[in-house]
Image (cartoon, rainbow, N blue to C red):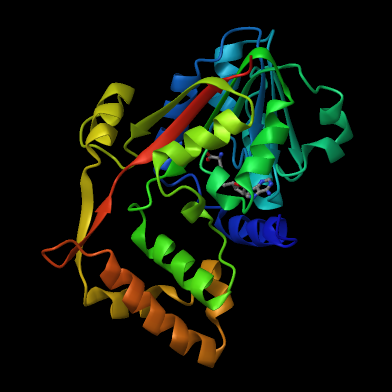
Length: 295
Ligand SMILES: C[S@@+](CC[C@H](N)C(=O)[O-])C[C@H]1O[C@@H](n2cnc3c(N)ncnc32)[C@H](O)[C@@H]1O
């Protein structure tokens, strides 16, 4: 893992923690819990738990006989989770720890529970890790036989600004906080889960963004299967999108004037490459959820 991934993620998510819950993540996390179907009495490990959007619905499903451990690197995100915990005294056994999900074995309290979890969840975070295959291998060691791992990666044609910066970063040798290019196809997620030793691996497309009038999981699965177009852009918009977004904390590495000039040129080049034959750049609303079982 790049030595600064944890530090970068902490800075990025600390700055977002106050408003993080005002987003589609709330519904997406619920859908993930619904797909994971935790059962009463189970032990769950929620990796990159953030503000607890997966942790709390999972804890509710488990009841007082189960337990959830949430791990995250961002103290800001964990402070939000902790606040929620304090106002829900009946929620059951929930504990949060500040730690990297790329290095579980160095958290002593967790290491003692290796091989004991029924379910590991990691929502909207696998693509933040530069070496996801190494991380997932370690995670699988924490499942008991028959235990389930559920995680997700975004379609490479989703959130186009981010994926374009990632390509720019690769060409310029500048790090960005996402590593979605590790998963150009859904089969890449399947491979990572299978290489980590999981069986019965399934990769399921799902929509992320709001569908008017429904929060029902089945509607989001149906929409994900069609990869609906969220936004349609022209090739010329690249200039404006770059100028509007390059100062964001997420793209801090392009701050130097000379680097920024080159980055803009490459951004426009990479943006144009995504255009269809009719010259439109289409942002698709699709995420792949991967599920596998430890033999
Ligand atoms: C998009 S949020 C997802 C949070 C939560 N799982 C959800 O679904 O709302 C990504 C989270 O990953 C965390 N994160 C990123 N890199 C991490 C690492 N190496 N170790 C632990 N947490 C990490 C961030 O702090 C952030 O809370």
